[in-house]
Amino acid sequence: MESSTAPFISPVARPAHFDDRARWNGYVERHPHASVYHRWEWGELFRDVYGTRWRPLVAMRGARVCGVLPLVRLSSV
Image (cartoon, rainbow, N blue to C red; front, side, top):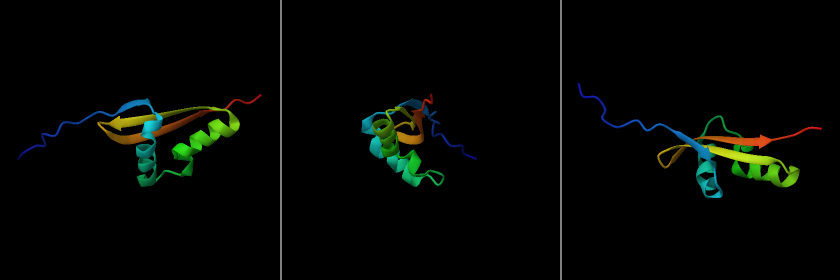
């Protein structure tokens, strides 16, 4: 019996940049549990309208997006 020799590539999380937008949204569109709130534009909306800090993180496996985390920091007074 022959085993797979394809190496497993561990995902790497890093801050996302504007250049990641298309791949980010492509991942969101294909993911069965994603919603409009995961889209790149939603984070920009929060930043622009509410003045929040938006820190998107993207998980990459090679050149492929394998996860997104759209972090938004909200403060209440």
